[in-house]
Length: 134
Image (cartoon, rainbow, N blue to C red; front, top):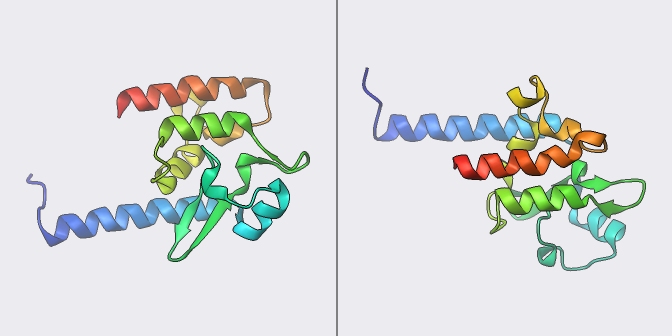
């Protein structure tokens, strides 16, 4: 069987990307920039290394799992993992997909399920493994 090249291959890739984006949107709640600025009291969110932003045309939305909503802070473990997975901060959708995708090392649970648990320190090890594989 041959792998399609040309427009068919591009269409398949685009469809896969859209499917991954849809999965992220179904799995996470999002905050807009004003909500994040109000919560953190930090005007320039582009300066926050490791903050995961998802680009929708001309706006950016931020998955809520990266925030401790009670303390109104960013989760340090999430910033560290995001920084490992996407040091340039250019591929938020792939990083978000990693957080919500079932992982065999967790019995099929997604990495996001470890947040706020005693096992959340495992996330750094898992992220290092992903970077080594890429």
